[in-house]
Length: 333
Ligand code: PBG
Image (tube, rainbow, N blue to C red; front, side, top):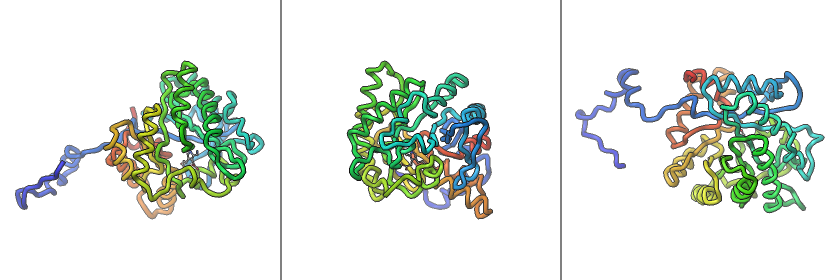
């Protein structure tokens, strides 16, 4: 579409900015609670909400407390929650066996949520890092993060989560071939309606730092994730990754992080027209919260502006730690 505009004074673009009513009428994009997915951190125990220092306002929750948070989110009109486990260090191994344990923390949480709040969609994370004593998303063999062996493990993890009742699987590992392998295994096991929201364009980013603290992966991780996560200098590659994941059976795709990659969101939406999500990651949350807590920016306004930016960039929804705060301000269901 080519923008046309009459010469001044026929066109005075300020006319439609004159009052709140006119601004509202002319507004192109809108944010609502229904656009949000709430990521939450789980931990073992009872009646625990353990603050995460690098993410003020976010805590690791025991399952009983998770149910309270999930119910509050649902009542605010948030349609989905995404689970990330903090795994006890004793349960982390080079073989990552805990990842597909049917009774691991995530799978117990899925069952509890589906029993208590069946209408809230439950999304999971698929990657080995929370369970890996090596801290990486894949198996480490002789210093290399191996692809095909990791994909087999991810498929086991996906099946265990589907079995527990997950609605949406979120592979965040960036191994090649994982979406097709998971989709085939899900079909073969009769899990025909489990959706896959692929972290298709996931960049090797400095903005994941606080998350790695939250899931307890910071200490274990040696080196970086640049041999599997994307190079921040690339854009065309994101389109190839999205095309590949859609061909392999992804239902929805994600760009991650969010704010530094809004151009990628727009390109993906324009090129494919599929449900497109962005993850406003832990470091983005920490920046806004940190500045707001010091009085350097208006936290509520900055939060809503940052989330609206994703809608303008073409996203259908956003994973954000701000989801409950934003939903409260937007007015719930
Ligand atoms: C790991 C995973 C990461 C996040 C989601 N899943 C971190 C990483 O790749 O190291 C980051 C989310 C955030 O920073 O909020 N599989």
